[in-house]
Length: 260
Ligand SMILES: Cc1cc2nc3c(=O)[nH]c(=O)nc-3n(C[C@H](O)[C@H](O)[C@H](O)COP(=O)(O)OP(=O)(O)OC[C@H]3O[C@@H](n4cnc5c(N)ncnc54)[C@H](O)[C@@H]3O)c2cc1C
Image (cartoon, rainbow, N blue to C red; front, side):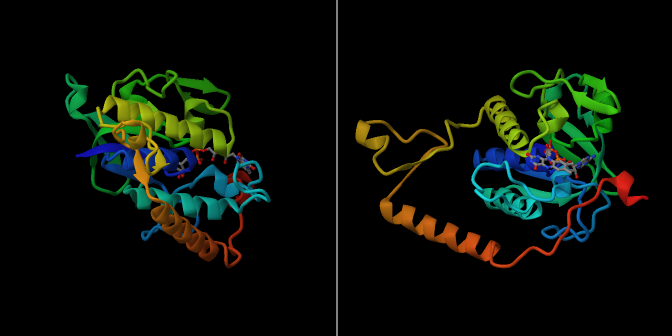
C-alpha cells in the first residue's frame, strides 16, 4: 500500500508530490492525462490534463522574468516530482472506498477506469473539475454554478480522515502559483498526519545548524560549498538543455471551442 496517492497530476498535485516524496512517503500520482501523446508519460491517456495546458504564456509564475511556456513548466514539474521519488501513472480515478468502513486508518481503495485498483493510506484529491469519485465518501462538496468544489479546513483536510483536497478543487483562487502553494501546504498536513520524521525540507550551508551546536533537523540537509557548486552546475546544465529548443506544442483549447 502506498503512503499517499495524489489524484491529479496538475499544478497542485505535482507540487504536493514533490513535498510528500521528499519527506520519504511512498507517493503515487495518478493523472488522467492530457496532450497526446503525453510527453513524459508512456501510456496513452484519455483524459483532460492540467487546466494549465490551455494557457498560452505563463507570465505570473514567480521565477520566470519573461514568462514560461506552460507545457514546459508542467513537464519540468513532473520531472521534479519523479526526481523527488514520486511515481506518476496515467489513469482516471472513478471511485474511492475505505478498505474498512470502521477503521479509516486502514486506508483506501481507488478504482481506475480500465485499470487495477490502487491502495493508499492517504489520498489528496487535486483533480480540478472532477470530484465525482469522492461522492461515496461524503467528503462535503460545494456546488457553485456548474462547478463542484470540495470543502476543506485550513490545512486541506476534508471531513473524512485520510482524504485531503488541494488546488482549485479545494476552492483556491484560479492561478497556478496559488495551486502549487496550496498543493505544498496540503502535503505538509499529510506529512504531519503520517508522523513522518520531518522538519522543514531545507537545504542549508554546512555549519548552519551544526556550528550552533544543533543537530541537522529531520528533513533538512547541510551541504558543503563544493556540493553546492556541484548542484548548481547540474541544475544549470539541466535547465540549459530543457530550454535549448522551442517547444512545438500548442495550448489545448477549451473543449466547447474544440468541438465546434
Ligand atoms: C486558458 C487558461 C489560461 C490560464 N492562464 C493562467 C495564467 O496565465 N496564470 C495562472 O496563474 N493561471 C492560469 N490559469 C489557471 C491555472 O491553469 C489553474 O489555476 C491551475 O492549473 C489549477 O491547478 P490544479 O492543480 O488545481 O488543477 P489542474 O492543473 O487543472 O490539474 C488537475 C489535474 O487532475 C487530473 N484529473 C482530473 N480528474 C481526474 C481523475 N478522475 N483521475 C485522475 N486525474 C484526474 C487532470 O488530468 C489534471 O492534470 C489558466 C487557465 C486557463 C483555462
